[in-house]
Length: 599
Image 1: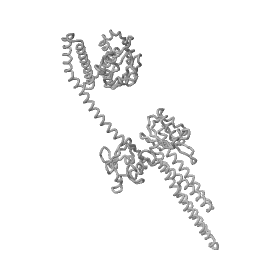
Image 2: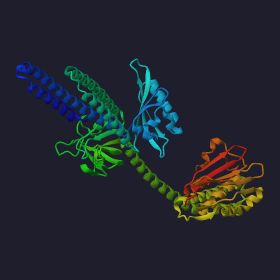
Image 3: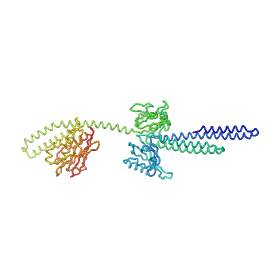
Image 4: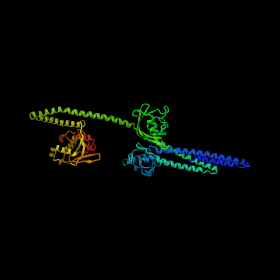
């Protein structure tokens, strides 16, 4: 701006007029002196008005820069959508979250930037906001080069006649805050052009001083109106920050000596709104209602995220604790980004942090529960192994002496005695099988395992040989596709396939058993379907069958202990996979289990 140039020109003209007046003749001196005084007074008033106008322009420039800096460098995305959901207004942060510059998204449908899985959620929140005239929140992901997960605030705006006008959208992104320099430079250039135009108007000084003064007064009135409008916009921006569900702190210098924030930030620090929140101040001036602690250690002022970002450091996903005087604690996490002057020197920062205290407490409780569960499972497995192992010996004695009793006295007492002895022998044998299966199940967790690369075809061939008698008796037809090589425990994988194939033969229908084993490549894992044409399983019981001791048939119908599928499930889980079944009564079953490809 040419503030001094205008004043110098006016003074030069005034001096010229003064010289002309001094050279006039003496008989006109008194008359022209009055004229000279009037001209001089008017010119002085003009200079004063011009200086006031220049000062007003400086204030306007400073206010414009401050508002534009806050609005476009805020880590919060801000959009206005019209009734049809098209973008009417957007700040640079909001446009960057969509993956484009602001000018490329104006008049575009906002929903096209949202991933398909989240569009219904956004529409429901928008309709609820419109119906209830209340702010609604939802979490969505945007379609960008890398996914941006954001919390959106939707607020309906209405005209003075209470007619719906548009939606106000506020986006809180904790993953990245975009830079607003390009848009800021464009606005600064436009503002400079407008101010240059104003100055050029002032340079056109008319000889009619009274009219010029009136013109200056009119211009000053317009500038005051602009200043009032900018003040309103600044207040709107402050309300936007207060509506953000996160603590927003703004550092106004590169040392973090002056820090202000939104209402929630003052609530978190337990200090009055508008107070200086800086811990960089000398003792006595700094707030003493809280301490900033990380990993149990008090942070020095220069180590705090807001001060570090004010010096030019980008802070991402920083976690710290706010510890109050009563030793209560609030756990925070968020980002801080530097602000720069026109020479790219850091001159402050904007930071956004959210309260994750409840998440942290839940995480600690979950870790404790997991440890307790691991300990409990270990003790339970050890108990099952020891108990079943110790029971085998007395059971073997009961079984041996019962069989000896049956052999020696069968047919020598009476029919009831023979029947009772048969029940005892049968029960002892079934108990023996049950203990064997329990021991086998316990070994799946407690035993040391050896994993190696094995061709699954060889495993299936071994099982077909193991089950040769059952296959021949049932005339079962077993086929399998070309199966891959995997890093597995051979003993467990033999047991898995043997149980599945053995079950398909055991639970066969009146038809000749047909069993087919195939494989599906799912990228990072293989899925193995084992299909049969047996009696099938009612959908009501398809989840129940993998639980221990869950039988769908009586012991007279089908022999077994009810542990086989539990063993299969445990083996699959040992290999970091999953197992499930699809079946229909009378039409057979297909058991699916997955095994990861990696070692």
